[in-house]
Image (cartoon, rainbow, N blue to C red; front, side, top):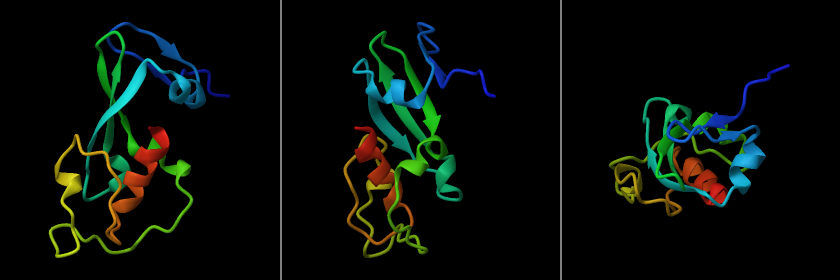
Length: 111
């Protein structure tokens, strides 16, 4: 059995024992997403905590929150690309049928 907490704030050392506890905490806000184009689940979601601490958590930790289709082709830089992945503070959904789009749906669930 894993006795490790889900996350510890690196600034104030607040402990979230579970992902559910973390997601329900109003003192935590998702503020960004740093894409990793080679391995999407290695990308990083950026969060602010009310203590003014900022930290990242890998996409893979939240990827099971998305149950829809994941497109096989990446549209990055192509005509269907909206460029959202290039702007870490843009957390809006992406309408493109792109391999990266599922991450943006996970962001909506976190928000």
